[in-house]
Length: 513
Ligand code: KIV
Ligand code: ZN
Image (cartoon, rainbow, N blue to C red; front, top):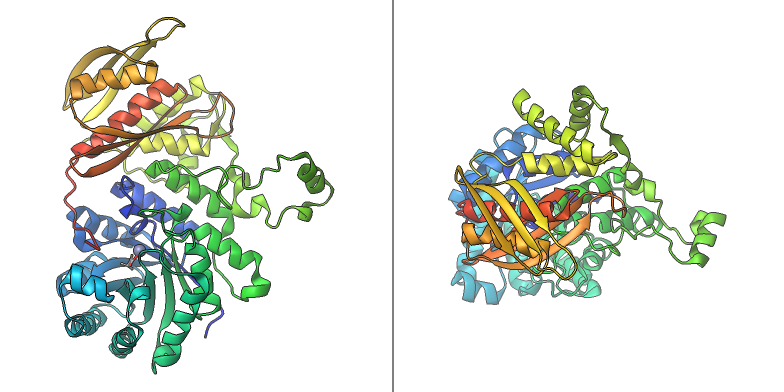
């Protein structure tokens, strides 16, 4: 048994399954690069067989990432596994992660297969995957609610067929820490060849115990891989949060006795990048990465921290990357300084024309805002990363009027499918008026299910406002994000960005559908 804990990040696969969190290829690549800077051991880049778009994402990440293992999910069938292997071809180090449900409920109601059929499919799939890749992970979906005898039979066989990692998902977040840890331990004790594979935990957060369950799987169950996502992003209540697991194992090394290879100073930058890209805002009191995580508001605490840091602090803010929040550029910064900062942030632009367009936006922003932070640059590049095919809608101009005692009014000019529209509307407030004006012409019929505004950097009113708009239409949910020092403009951008996502045809097979 090794004393290293493998960190397997699935932000780009399981995290992305969260309604509204879908990302473009460039966004995923940017996050994959940040995950590599964070030194995660494995990046699950997507589910190659689900769509051509996902296939391209996995392939592009496989081509660019050199240090981390790049992994693709595949259902337990030859087609999915071949697509995963094909997408992973350019990878320096590749892994195929194949899965099939093993709980009685899932086998009967979802797969409509008998246990013997599932057993055979698991066996043949791992055998086939091993012909294409040396590194094969197997997951019995809904493993925690599966019959232990059946699970032992399946897992012993897939290990014999060459599975190198065995992952036990608590797919529906039903587990309790002690019970989950014992479950893993019993499996490992009962399966004769269990020592031939690395054991892994994959916990969902429906009862708020994903991190606790994962840690119990490590401590009591002997798992040496944790599957997790940045900010705990994921369907429903999310997945196990990477930053919490890593900092728990680091801070309590006395208890866990394990090493993690993560560069923890990259945690906060990764958290910001994921939240800005997906529009899933991090709650202020979230452990490690929340804005208040290191803020000592009460006078007593402040006094204690000033006298001796460890009176109230168990981790140092700078160790998880909070100090990375520095002013980097301003109005006088030139194109070279901007280009260099893009490189330091891991943002690669393909052409000089793209850099010029981003630089023009930067100059425009710097005219309106004296201090430009990394987060501002990420937001600015987020706007840029939309390709012309994805940009059916684009904001051209906006003016609005609001005055006490008057009904607010907005005038918006925007492009839709290459044509220009000028529209106006009244509303309850200037944001409402602007969105109503756009909708009166766009006629999307989408329902606005979430609207939120955040200051991108410090709490000052000089900060850019970052708006997230979530729209629902025809069974699809999308998030649009827009940033601008003027929150009404940011709102219009966010609304149009969400309309662009609704407009783009995504024809994707659900992994666990
Ligand atoms: O939660 C789950 O069961 C999964 C598997 C596909 C690993 O995400
Ligand atoms: Zn999952």
